[in-house]
Image (cartoon, rainbow, N blue to C red):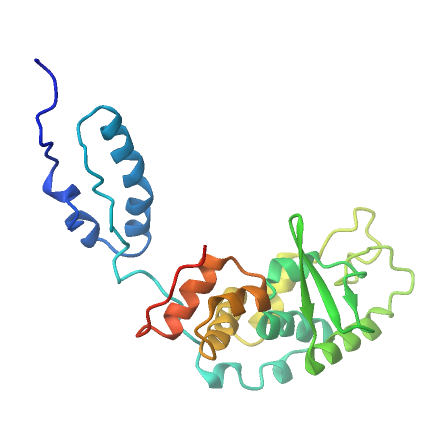
Length: 238
């Protein structure tokens, strides 16, 4: 029948299970190809252009980007170099508990519970409960004392400034104000966050531990454990 596909079906060598095309790329390009290829093959299968599943066993190349740790001397004494209790709390929550900087900015005054040494970090419909250690408890207490300099504050956010404490819109602390804390130690918030998770991953090969401790996505936990232990094969989290 004219126009019907030949069997067994053939596909370009770049689509073969050897993934020669994917192997030529790394990083974001490889991840993009890996996410697009399944849709292409599903369409070809519906048109009866292929019978097999070329994506079977196909994995992203080993050259994918993995987090690298900060050198110890860059983090040593970082809190002591910061100016003011607000900056120390901001960097401390990211560096100790891997709370993202944007999450720190969104915190409300009701989120920390010093009596029970906890901090509620809201993530959409989910709330991750951070258990504060001695240092972060002290950092939180220092800031709450300093925050009292504005007794007439109406802004419900935990972190406020002289511009926001009575602002009618009750805005959260600005990105520039958040970055200013990290600029004092010449580090990016994302780098500090990643280094904390990677440091914990060095102590365990269990990604579930990272999920429970930091409330991160299982896929992120697996990536960091792989980065910390590249010589060990890890089971997938379902």
